Amino acid sequence: MSRAVTLARAVSLSILLVLPGCQDDQTSNGAPPAAPAPVTAPAVTAPLPTAPPPLSLTCTADPRSGSVPLAVTFRAFPTGGTGTYDFLWQFGDGERSTQVHPSHTYTAAGVFDTSVTVTSGDQARGCERSVRVEGAPAGPIPPTPGGSPAPLPDLVITIVGNSGASSYSPSLADARVGQRVVWRNADFIFHTATANGGAFDTGFLAPGASRSIVTATPGTFPYHCTIHPGMVATLRVAP
Image 1 (tube, rainbow, N blue to C red):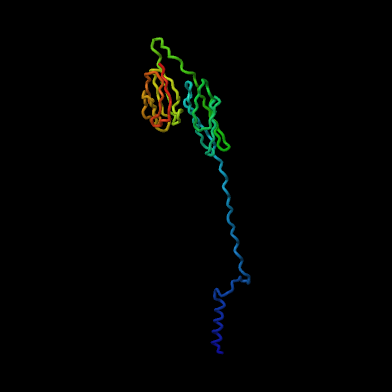
Image 2 (cartoon, rainbow, N blue to C red):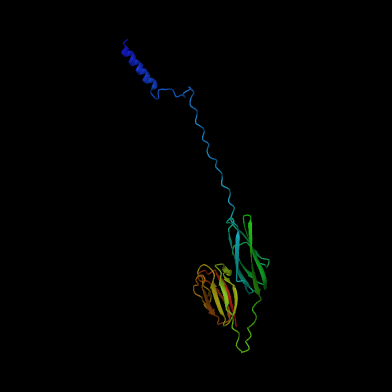
């Protein structure tokens, strides 16, 4: 064999030995490469339960004074807590209610300490309102020393809402001839106070509005709301 052929074969062999990718997948010492380190997922922490906000409570009574029989509408306004509430009203005369906004009629004179207890979860709050109930109106007001009768105070009747016989407070009101009677709409919608026989009519009363009449004839006058006929009450007018 010639020297040129031998030299060519040697060069080809040297090229094969140094080409990248032609060596075995081993380390320089002949051992296989190390396996990659395992990846650990981050721990998931469950959120802690959030405590409900503190429970607070306000309440109202309307009206808070008047003559027997006195119909009073009570309202409770809780906030905070779990958002779910239980109510217990105690009217001071042995009667109770679990309604949110109950109405109660006092049939005896006295001062009644009314309370409501509201519970929400493991929280409880109370609110109190006193109601003063006077006896039935006396006879005609005696004249003043000058001979003229003393002026009569306005009789204010509050429209509390569409609650049947408890829609007007007081539901049975007593007035005298010549006395001014004022109806005040404390509800959130329109109402009227319209005598069944047409003796008086306030017309439509917007929320917060008032309208008055001056009584001219003695008698008993049932009346209602023309928008909500189930709302009823009675005005008695004495001479």
